Length: 234
Picture (tube, rainbow, N blue to C red):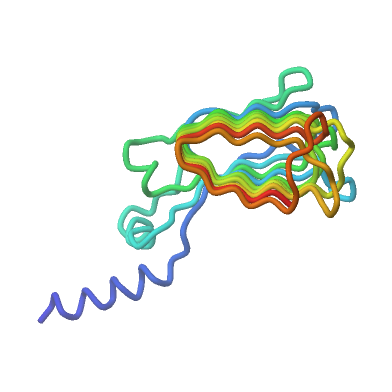
């Protein structure tokens, strides 16, 4: 009878407690010209908004069914051993979970607003990246990657085992080079109406949906290589 009374109380208490998070921040990134992210899995959000302060934050939060139970029983923050620092004009972010449990229970979130024209490199085993703005170059490497770009980048290089990519260009400057290599790929590339694109797709099995045929020598130039590929080009 005592157990029956105690367990509902624990359930109510665990539901009432919010997921705890730990956060670090760098307030001023006005001098940054490149961002390099490496290490364990993370969720990445980077913008190049001029109407917002340039800065970055790194936080960890628990997710999933057990997140509230963990907070109730242990009263522990979602801590991580990640490191964020500026070296010259480069913002370095190294993601590292604090224990064996954290990779499945914690989400490390990277949020940054950097000057337009910054180069971005991501080298992680698994990540999601939401990029809004104008970047000079984007280089991505990982086993599992989900990348969304709304804006522009002159050079894009994506490497991975399983990749989902949505690259939506808000302008074309006829200097764009896009290279994607993945075993399994689901990609959307949007350049705008009536934009000539030089594209080549090499795969064991592929489904390519393009509004117009490839125009050799044109820019944007797109090269896609993979085992199983599904791509739309607009």
